[in-house]
Length: 259
Image 1 (cartoon, rainbow, N blue to C red):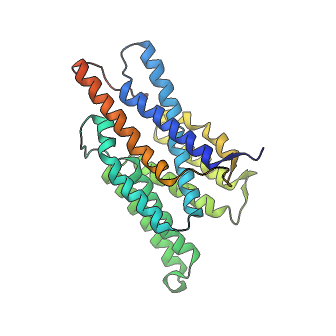
Image 2 (image 1 turned 45 degrees about the horizontal axis):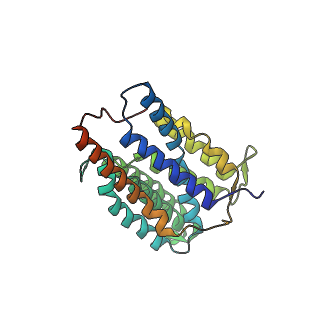
Image 3 (image 1 turned 135 degrees about the vertical axis):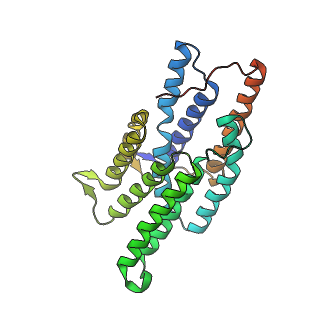
């Protein structure tokens, strides 16, 4: 067995995200049964974000066109905002929170600039200037995530930066304390997310998937399907949630949130 390929990990991330959002939007804490089901949905959903972080960094390293990659993230961040707000709040627009595509886009922007600093004769070979600029950009994208209130916010952007730096490091250092370098970085990402919120400990099983990751995909998922799934499932969930609230007169209880 060669391992788990990118195609499989992407499907695991998408399905876990779907279950998480179904639990958040449609399951309400009205009794013990719904609380248990909501907790299960929440736990499964924790796999999604760290896996998407890993896939983003891996995709960035492999892509032939960073420009098209970034443009896709930007376009789908814009497309996803209304579906995200509908699923989150039942309103068409909510400036208090922005969808996770913005977080991924900010992380991508950092990686793109960092590649210029680390790979090329940037700033006339004055390397320290480039490194200072890279650190400054890290601060800027993190602050931007905080300001925009993007999903996972500063922790999400920092997770992408950590994973990227360890993937870069893996080219020169194959392992850290006997652990594959990119996997070690992924474990740090999980620890960071748990520090952000204790419930993220449910993301720990994702380490096993990355441990067995096989980079050469057996199958490929069309890019638009992977991107379109995010706004499409949020739109459907949002409309169902609004319909349920209309039918029940808004008496479906408080949205589920595991603490």
